[in-house]
Image 1 (cartoon, one colour):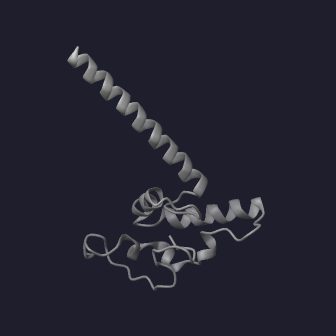
Image 2 (cartoon, rainbow, N blue to C red):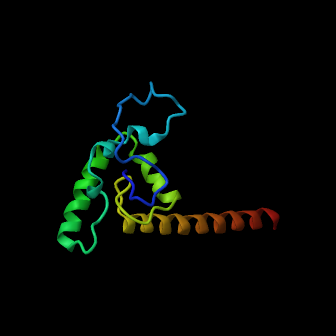
Length: 124
């Protein structure tokens, strides 16, 4: 996924070199195989005051690029762990990433509750 100027991860403007994942150097960063390296950054990031219909169309086009990307999962996890506040990353918009993060937090809380209940049953 291409980054806006404030991002620390540099992918934009670098020519992509396709190397099969099984043959690539294991120390190479995941983004070296990102399909979006060949696409325009504007596809992944909203211009200011973008009309809703245009935004939805642009986001769908960006998601189509992501869908064919061999490192989509790595990109998505990067965006969730950072967390990236803007753009389409790993096939998800910023709003969709917020939903995923909220679900993960709820799942973690439920797992902790279940573990505590199990520990209490075994102790009691």
